[in-house]
Image 1 (cartoon, protein in one colour):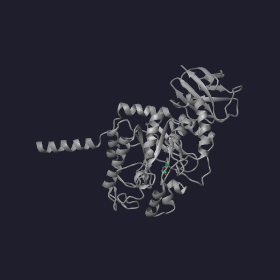
Image 2 (spheres, rainbow, N blue to C red):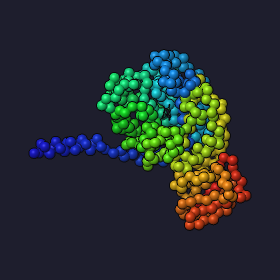
Image 3 (spheres, rainbow, N blue to C red):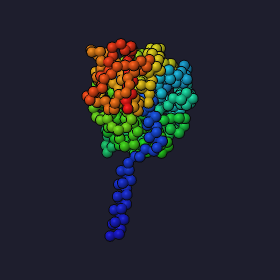
Image 4 (cartoon, rainbow, N blue to C red):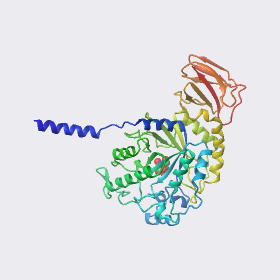
Length: 429
Ligand code: FHN
């Protein structure tokens, strides 16, 4: 009998250990707040695929055999790469963090890793580690660095891309070996590179396997509890994650079909979008978004309580193409002038209106009028608290308003409008 009870106790212990819930540390919670305050980040897709100028999926889309594709490493030599230029590009645009691809689906590591010879230091004539230079420069310039990390790998034998999945593993691969490989690389990324603040996973959606997230996320948080873990699985957040991301759609929208199952959770939010239509460098893609469109994306995301991560694909020589620099210089000038209504704000909880959105900081509300209304006023529904003052953010001039039980009318006649976004600051009690 005693033996049986002991055994049951052991089993229960095992069950509860397995079902342990993740409790973020105080440092992690502070990092989440800081993450939400930053609001605007730079996403960078850069790899040996950039050489072909056809995006990061080129190997897969053009059916290039892995052994042929691997040759790209022999002539990847980004002599014009300059970490300072990249960081200054982000800073000038008003971005506060950078997320860079450390390894994409092609499996090539853009950092010096001991876990695989297929990496930029060992397999290319460049022989240097750009991500180390970037990490050091980010620390120097006060920009946060996060690493994108692909779970999916088109080339490794242990991953066995295309293999049938049996019992949560690829039948033709060596899943334990692949999980251990990822753990080794993630350990390097977190322990070797100074100031790294987050890991951005991608590729989950490729197969229905046991990804061992308990071990992987557990390891990351053990190495550094403040690291923010996010996963672009296009689903609801999972245990152990610290923020939720959306791809090419604002939270709650699903124009691209990625977000059908990603119900908005309680974690900090981020949405990513491309500056043209490509993630990795695409020489043919000239559908550049205008600075106005980018500003509106940033403002709309902030109104929905989300960060905006804007992607560029640098050229294979390491340079950023001038079209991106020009557009982001305009965005940067706008953010510099209007940052008070973006950085450190949260969503107001008031839904987006036909004229725009509202961000909030404590008792201040920032009303972003991005589409001129038909009538000479806007109406703000569901506003809690009493408005005591309304003024144009640009010059502090008073703006007329009227508050009723249903909401607030803000009158725009005589107000100097801004072609991107006319911001009116409301003070509530
Ligand atoms: O397949 C990737 C793609 O190349 C790119 O990295 C984007 C970024 O969000 N994520 C995947 C598609 O969901």
